[in-house]
Image (cartoon, rainbow, N blue to C red; front, side, top):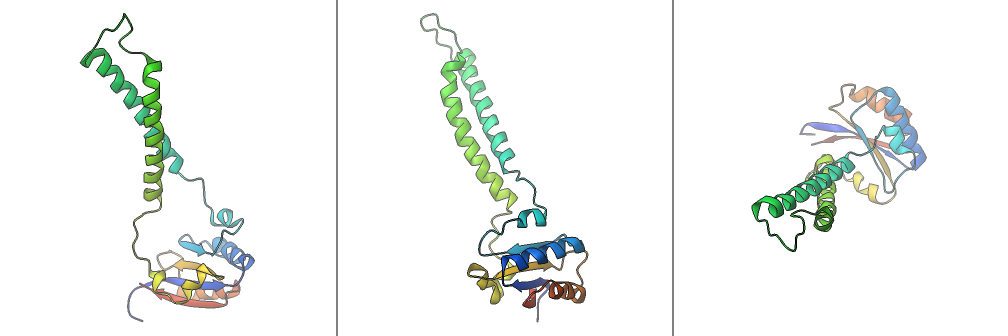
Amino acid sequence: MNGTPYGLIAEFDSPAAVLHAAEKVRDAGFRRWDVFSPFPVHGLDKVMGFRNSLVGWFALVFGASAFIGSMLMIWYMNGYDYPILTGGKPMFSPPQALVPSYILLVLASAVGAFVGMVVMNRFPRLYHPLFKNSRFALVSRDKFFLVIETADPKFSETETRALLESAGSTYIELVVE
């Protein structure tokens, strides 16, 4: 094999088997690992230690910034930049500015959620070493895979392979970049 090793990929036949293997990998202290499955496996997010996503905070910051910014823009334009006195009405009225500001809040929140998703998922990633692995294509059908990266500080090929074998893996292979 030529190329730098990316990690060990282990194949499992059932959701219960990959969940059990994920628990063993977590308990062994690995930090850089991932599980791939054809459908969501209940409880896997807790085993992998996932926390709530930060994407909602992106949407909040973008939406609040747009709302406050548009209210300030309307206040400045009506009150100072180009004041038009009409029938003795005030130069700035919050109910009048609420509708365009709310529309910009919704639009900016959607943009913020999209930007947050792209940033948090590290997109665009056009290539992944697992794409070259022929058996990895089975993940879209009926197989479950657990990958432990060589970048993990605890990674040792022989010990990691033994751990995955003891977890019940049906096939283990070293993936190279």
